[in-house]
Every structure is written in structure tokens, then in C-alpha cells.
Image (cartoon, rainbow, N blue to C red; front, side, top):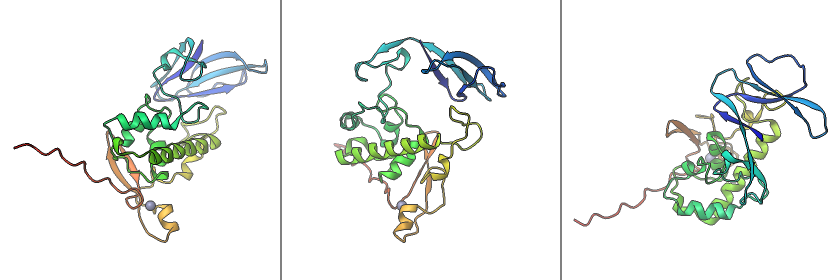
Length: 233
Ligand SMILES: [Zn+2]
């Protein structure tokens, strides 16, 4: 079985057995590390939106027979998985009648992308969040998937997208990725890419579902509207 973290909040920490309890410690699970040493998995949740789920593992064809949790079977491979196939993503994307950011956040298309990574990757690939998916060219998707991978790698290197003390990595340290964000949360600040070209273009915030998108209106131009189907009147 495997522990799956569910919910909107909380952190899984790896700790020494007998280490002092964290504030808001909810669960403690003794485990044996790969090197045979004793460790504790701990679940710390200041809010109460998170939880753990014990799940069975089963082999998954899309992941090359790798065993994954049963509850995750419908979730697509994440872009850093060795078998991740950006061309397959493109084929699925092109079949959708949706808009780009909405599709990016759909875990059945590609997994692991939330609001922050989506905004950062779209900025990196110079694509507007409202671009119709059927208008994505292969080169657009490949550029976007490369941008997603780049954002994820940078985030992993520094321990996640932390904005506050609530978000920590498995060692309990805060992440410092927020400082390197190019679009997300930078409303009104200069776009760094445009600034490098000597142009003053400011990041704007646009409503997106119940949240917001952050983008540069100059290097991520809004797509022209779909041509309306002519009414046969
Ligand atoms: Zn720009």
C-alpha cells in the first residue's frame, strides 16, 4: 500500500523517530527508509482541508508497468516522467474544444500543473491562457511542454512554490521559488523578457474561472475571437 496525500492543505514531512512534534501534527506513520533506517512520515496541517488515504498499488500501462495508486489511475503522466510524451499531449489537446489554460489544469490531460505553474509556463512559451486548444500547432505544444518541464525542475530544485510558512518541502524548509516567478503574482511589474528588449510592458491580471491569470499582454497576445458560425437567416 502507499500513502496518498489528499486535499487542499497540509505537508508530508520525513522525520527522525522521536523528533519533537510539529505544531498542527495530525498523523505519524513509522516507515523504513530504503537504506533500512527508521523514519517517520508525518502529516502537518494547520488548516483541516488535507488528509491521508491508504491505497493499493497496481501496474499502469501508460507508465510502462510502473505501479501507481489505484485512485490515481485516471491521472495523466506528469511532464517530468521518463515516459511523458509531448506529442501525445498535443494530439489530445488538438482534439479538445477548450482553451489552453483550462486544458493545462485538467489532470487527465497532463498532471501536476496548478495555477502558478500554468501561468509561468504560458509566459515561458509566449502563449495566452485563452488560446483555443484546437489552434495549437505542434511547435506551440512542444514549446509549452518544455516550459512546463523547466518550471517544474526549477521549482523542485528550490523546494516548491512557497509564498508563506505554510508551504514547506519534505525536509520542513520553506521554498524559495516564489522569488523567481516571472508572471504569477507580479501584476503591474515589468515583464522581464520585454524589459530585456528595452520595452516597458507590465504584467496584467485577468480573471480566470474563480481565480486569475497573470500574463504579459505584449509577448502573450490575446487570440482573436473564434469566427462566429454564420447564422443562416
Ligand atoms: Zn513581455
